[in-house]
Length: 603
Image (cartoon, rainbow, N blue to C red; front, side, top):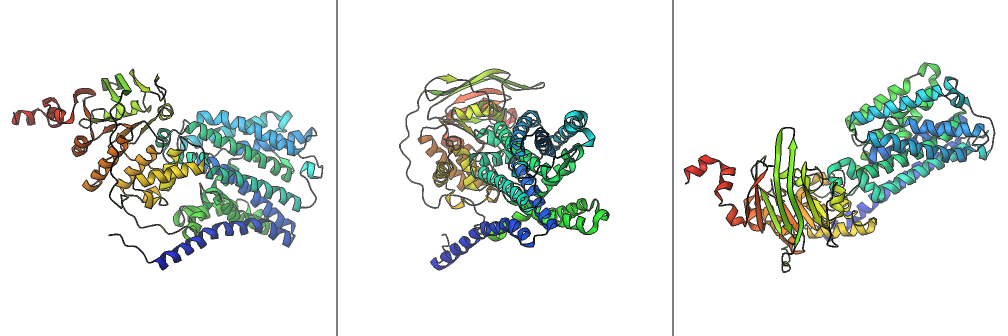
């Protein structure tokens, strides 16, 4: 039986959770207010400078975090967009155009540059992407040095001293702080909006498991390009303001690798991938370095690098999730104990199974080679509407390769996969997104959850395939979780589930896409007998809704209970197909699994 806490304890826990949920936004509101109240109250020019610098670097880091945190692309060349904004604004001021206009002109140019240089770079992963962004940053620095007639070259450009709101130049510091704070609020607002809407969920999913995101219908290239465009535009806008604040620019400072690393480090220290982490990182580090420079003068040259290094080392050792991770310990509701998701009550009787319909998938002559290895050889079969087709075979038979071709992750060397669309026409999808769009969903042999997201958010990624509305996607996720026995764990992070729970979560994510064809890749491997029985019931209930299923499975109990037909692969070829009871007794199948010696010994 399940232990149920007393009602009073539950009420007290709910009240405590409510207080924790209110604590975070209240604390952040106080921090934002402090950025304006403290320097205004003190009135010291140096204090104003420190807080203006906090706003600038918090904004730059927040903009970087949209790419580096949400999308997981560790760009170390973000100084490109900062420099573009700075030079565009200053050059236009030189010909009499207000920096308020130059700010948006620089943002537009930065967006174009971001798309042009990021599209090929997204093919690179890990350190190679970071190195490519550094290389582009150096290219822009050299270009700024070369075109000295426009940029001033190594000599740099001075800002014409035209005071007033139209030119972003003031004798007092308060208006400058107001502009810097306003840009920070805009950047935080954009980052907050993105994280809470469809694109934010898709970016996090892409960062966590790109292949699973593509299978869920996410256009991973498009969402990353959108992220880098927004990030580049915001960075350029802040770069324009900062150039006007500094009153002098030159290539080494504007296209600086040091600056690019700094803004990334603030996010890492504050909490990468969070909305307010970059703000916390800047509020911690900027005052320390600026005060050290003010107190020690020339003797403190390079001290900021030491400060950043020491703080980063301490964060990595003791706060791997950054300062926001520390705050989360006190603001998040306490997680439920780790457990295996499963039905808490007997399953409701299944509806009567609809009759098997016409073909919904046709596979013809699939051939795939990897070098000299012939992985699949003339594989062909069909799947009917409302049917469960079992795909079995010994290890290395080519089953997963077939699945990858059935879902667009691999292109066959020959042959084709055709899917009947809802309107009755036959189509030949190409990419995983095309297969998802026409109603083909899949799971993976090795489960691919979005580990940093909750169970609810994982399922929402699938629901976003059919709806862009967050509320509707959340409702679909909750309904799907209820059917899959995952409702009690909606707020738990996916990484906290057991293997059985993760497999069920992956099926739930696919079912939230409302597929017509479901490809299951060993969803029962590694789970206990009780979970196998539950999984069989779940698959049968899915089939009864009219979904056609192709299942790769090694658990023969499941194959026999689920499959209407079975196809056996061996060495990339179909060696038998038919009813399960007939196929498992086929001598060719027994030989493929157990060898000739076993067959002869029992002849």
